[in-house]
Length: 160
Length: 160
DNA sequence: TTTTGACTTCAAGGGTACTTGAGGTTTTAC
DNA sequence: GTAAAACCTCAAGTACCCTTGAAGTCAAAA
Image 1 (tube, each protein chain N blue to C red):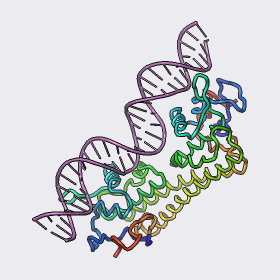
Image 2: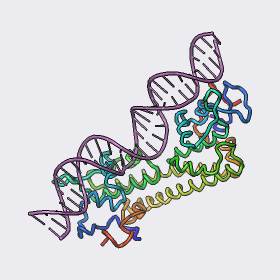
Image 3: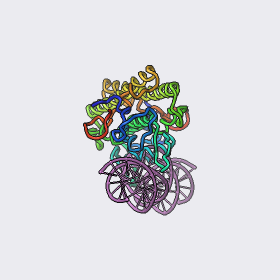
Image 4: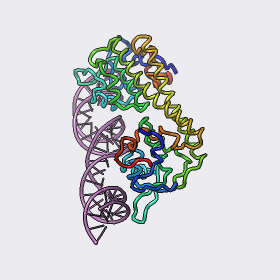
């Protein structure tokens, strides 16, 4: 129900919340909906990072929740992890990112999303045209053939 | 350059164009930009289909170009082949699809794209808010935590 | 006719994004 | 103190989406 600030909630097991409290893998997983194995995988890739306890267990700083959440949003939208990596460029892993770090990242994300949305919008427009003109006609729908190699130059097969 | 109707072009090797002419794998590949190996893979999956020559070589009917083009568009937008399969439901593989077949398919595609675009638009709005409010704040951005399990019901850890 | 290029199948390999399991350690709860 | 739950690493497995290579066949051009 409460879709807001669930990420800010403290684990019941701990029952206190210092603002710089560290989270276990399990807590991260519960908060973000991302499996522990996936979190470890992201860490291997360098998308996220953790401190270790004396017993070698992972402890995530709070701000890592943002990263993980953004990663999972990206996943839902079909954005590959390599692009996510790019979007996180200049956002520090080792220290809590500053106001400006996140602002920059937000803008990068927005640009990425904008490109994706525009691609979809164009395809939507084309398909609308197709519906109107009759039947997904190849003649009318250049979008269906956007990177066609036939048009490059005179060599090879061309239209008559 | 000519981005239009390249798909309608005939191969120079043949030099004639019956409207029901069949295309080889290589021709399909050149026209759509999709590798022959990928075309065979799509065929294994049942996304496309071909006739065979007496010598067991594939020959694709012209209308298969539409399918392949739509598949590759979907790929560019991060849409999985299983969704593509769904979008092609009721579009016949064995015969040339009718006007209405493609109209229905177009509408299905449009609905799929619309959903995707809306997801992106919402994320864009959220990020805009984040940029405005300061720094991708988790408090403000419920989108970052959309399917949070903590909110489901009373059991387990909850916010304080 | 012969040669070349395009095609065939089938098996294996590769990248991405993880999950699963074995075998062992740490932390927490009682 | 002890037992259970949670964690650790590492290797292997899985699913999707293909590519590559071997070994051979077909089709078209010279």
